[in-house]
Image 1 (cartoon, rainbow, N blue to C red):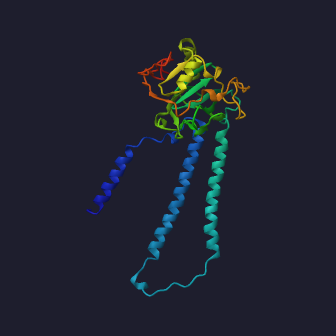
Image 2: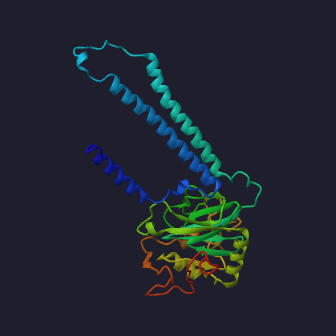
Image 3: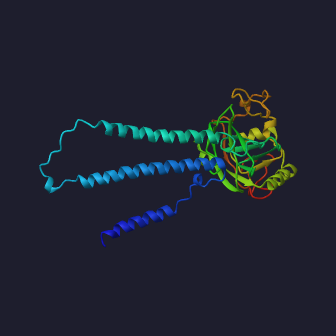
Length: 334
């Protein structure tokens, strides 16, 4: 009984330690793309657990069956040159394992790159998600509105995020809706996803890009179509306009809270075109100005941290930038 005491105490400590861990959001999908990725992760884990179980079982069997015994003193095993079939077997099994995992991974990658199955005939909602040190800008060209550090989307409608960066490479990631994808300067990458159920989800930058990386998070709020339409109307009626000079100042500001505008920066700062070489307008036409003009220089980026509730710089407030309290209220905070 005394010998089992330390082992029991150790297991209890591990149980208490693990009970404090947060849930794995990648294994709690809220959309078809994330569900496909989650299924692939679980399949890979189970397959590897099965392999380890066989290996450990054989290991224990060999240790037990062929352990040294007094009755076997002086025994010398016969000399073996090799076994052709065993060599073929232990070469073929790893190849088969890698082949199975490769096929599953490739099929999953192809599936999540496309519009989720069942939504191919629906018009996607296009949202430009651009990053700057250290925040996210979400532009809705169809609605003509823009948000900063949060994004609202309707459920059961395909969403096409078009990603690019005003600075270093970042990685756009909403774990419960999709995998991550890079946002790069002067080129567009696309990410298709659908939210199955309403709810609040965490999104973040998954690629290190400097000292503000840890705080480069945003909320993705999935809502019903009726709630989404009401939110868009409220933003158009009450949110201020974003001016070009204000936008450039915003790009150079290190940290801000949630913001909402009744127009988009795409009007005066077009995104890169789809050919990955030149900037263009929302329809992919030739750029109206050099996209690089509004790229903040990391060396000169203001290291001013704004209050997350008031968005006020204690030294020099940004002009006309409204405060946002909570993304779950109509317009004021969203």
